Amino acid sequence: MSCLLKSVTVGFLWTLVTTYVVAEESAWTMHTIDNTSRGADGVRLADVDGDGLLDVATGWEEGGVIRVYRNPGPKQAKGMWPSVEVGQVKSPEDAVLVDVDHDGAMDVISCCEGKARTVYVHWAPHDVSRYWDAQAWRTEAIPVTAGQQMWMFCLPFGNDSSETNEPVNLIVGSKGDGATVSRLTPGADPRNVSQWTLTPLVDAGWIMSLRAIDMDADGDADVLYTDRRQATRGVKWLENTGNAGDDWPVHTIGGTDLEVMFLGTGDLDHHGRDDVLVPVRGSGVRGFCRGADADSWETRAIPMPDNCGTGKAVVVTDVDLDGRSDLIVSTEHSENKHGVFWMSATRGLTGDWDMHPISGDKRGVKFDRMEVLDLDADGDLDVMTCEERDNLGVIWYENPTR
Image 1 (cartoon, rainbow, N blue to C red):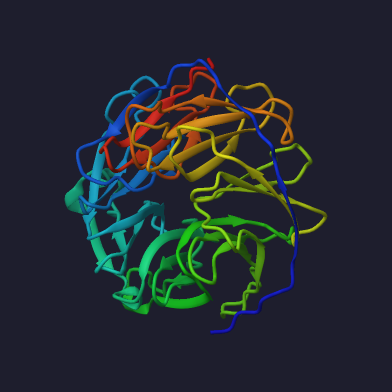
Image 2: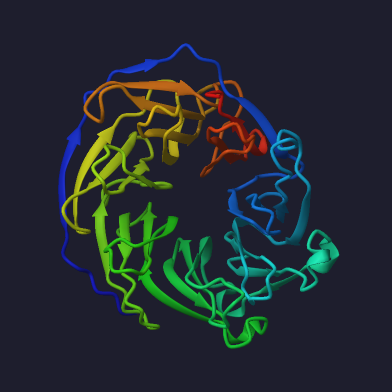
């Protein structure tokens, strides 16, 4: 495998002496999308039916099922959502919606760890009127991935439009022995899974996040990722060379001595450039603030508030509509602790932080990555996530700002 490691400039660590004020607030109202299987493991969004509403794909790790949920709109969003079970696989870690064969119907790619160690494609029916009919779906293992690695995450990368015949590239990440970040590409006939190819791009320990972002401002998307284990760990990005081979240079942002989890991006201190934020297992949140170029970063440490679980995922957004960026954090190991909460900086990154509850400390042990979207159409952003130990399932929390 070829992989060029470029030299980088990683800035010094700013450790903030932070005082947390836990606001006297109630937890947000929780709404259940589905809790009828076991081990909901992640939410991925796409509009599958063209109605302008984002629908959801989720894999249930212990239940061994992959489901797609139809967003019923703001008037019905607070109840259970209609769904279709698109396939059954063992130990799914991720499920993502993407039109693999350009027929206008969103298929699902699932990644499986455990003994399965395979990436599957769940083919949507060509007849869109049968999209929500489970009998019309078909599941196939992608042979080039079968039994090869413990697959953890899939990122649709590049063309997924039905208006062109160019293949969809998928970036897949894994964990454990032989783990990689790799490019998975269909052949000329995407439905012939024997034609798919797998191109390793970089060795890995345990891939958490994969994000398509133009890191070097050259007009194409690169791959921003977090690797939480082994000698390869850290927050890094792969430079898209446009080459179909494996010569995508890897750039290190930071966190090579930390167990980094699901990342988020956003302009936290309003300097006109997106920063990279990531929870660190057992050590709060790290902020990597971009300098003058894509290889210059300053590192800032934000401690975890008391009575919270260990960090799992972070989102940068304006929670309370005051024009300033806030952090939403999800955690695991949160039994009788705050599992999901948000933090507002009172005086920018160098000041105190207020901690505000979202899930509260009564329900939920292991939460996952999050999506923020306005599900009740009231003008503020709600939080969608999964919880897989108390079996809360696929859930969303209603932002009370408005």
